[in-house]
Image (cartoon, each protein chain N blue to C red):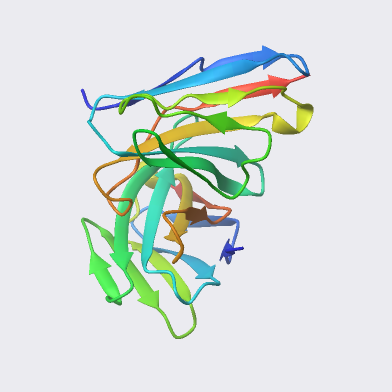
Length: 113
Length: 112
């Protein structure tokens, strides 16, 4: 089954404790992206990647890092999480161009205390 | 930065009626627009898209209209069904790079 998977689905952590949210897709997609979703603000793009070893900042990259060492994986790293990073995070992927349909993962709900 | 907004945060319709969800965007150079549906507890799901060289596109029970003059996008759902109850987001691809900007969403409730 073609899908985007994220882990963990739920995470509660404390300020300053480094964490990684994994994202993996099995569709051989080149474009991958991370979004955060907050009430009243919709989805905002954090980082995106056009291909392996190519990453770019989205609208709200501060406090986040990403890497794209393999085509299928696009982990989101929070080196020193803060409470304002409490949010619902979605990973997405699409085919060869960014105008192909984006498939979203199920989301990761992160709470930073 | 980009600004994509929706005209109404909530919309209630009777089952069988047509629904219209509106969206305004700010960047006249944006060249690609998408509508997504998000059900509770799930990620957004692609519904339909349209490029800036078109003003209308139809799918199964859905139609997207693009008015570039007033920078307005709408999603029409025909014969709305209870399964259409969800939050609907419009999104645009900016003209610089491959970044996407989403609206804040409209919550559609279908009344049986």
